[in-house]
Amino acid sequence: MTALFNSYIYEPILSVLLFIYNSIAFTDLGIAIILLTIFIRVVLFPLFYKGAKDQAIMQKLQPHIKKIQLDHKDNKEEQAKLLLDLYKKYSFNPFFGIFSVVIQLPIFFALFKMFGQELGNLGIANTMMFGFLDLGTKGFVLPVIAAGLQYIQGKLSLPNIKSQAGDNPMASMGKMMIYIGPILTLLIFSNLPSALSVYWIVSSLFAVVQQIYINKKLPKLED
Image 1: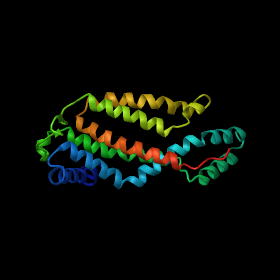
Image 2: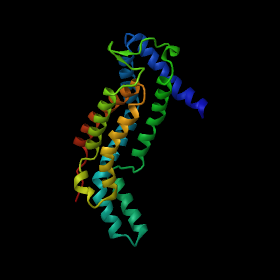
Image 3: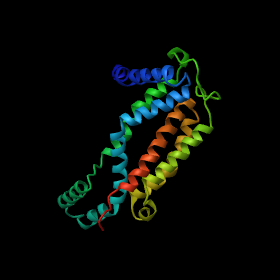
Image 4: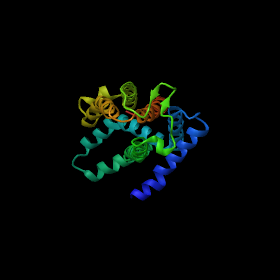
């Protein structure tokens, strides 16, 4: 597994980062990470978009799902059929949102491995961003920004959470994660090299813009 991870994830990402760093980013690590993150988001855009869209649809479908489960609680076969019809009607895959999250983990682990070592050994002599932020060290400002964007993204992805949370355990959990997610982001990134915070900030900005677009394009659900 380690060999596969290095060959197909870590080394390709490192090669792209070094290419950007040396040829486009004027040896500014911050600019290189920003451009690398944009590159990753663009390449994986279909997966990220589908996952974010399905998550938003899932929240809107919760009242319909709960009604089907209550109306057919004694007939699991009919319940499963109606749920499948509902998912099909709105082109919703209940597992794709999880997949889109999982696919980010190897990328983050690759960056963690990259920035967790002496960057000079990788050919990155300048660890500064815009000449004044050292991305090779821990910081607090960037994690705060990352946590703030995490909160905004959570609010956008769960637009109807207040109206559902009272009688919907899944919606209540989603509401809780709106606040827990940013707190965890702050705690985790405050103890990691600032380079990782830059990646998370740019990725979250991309996700916020994407979610705003998705929310505008979401199909109206029938009552």
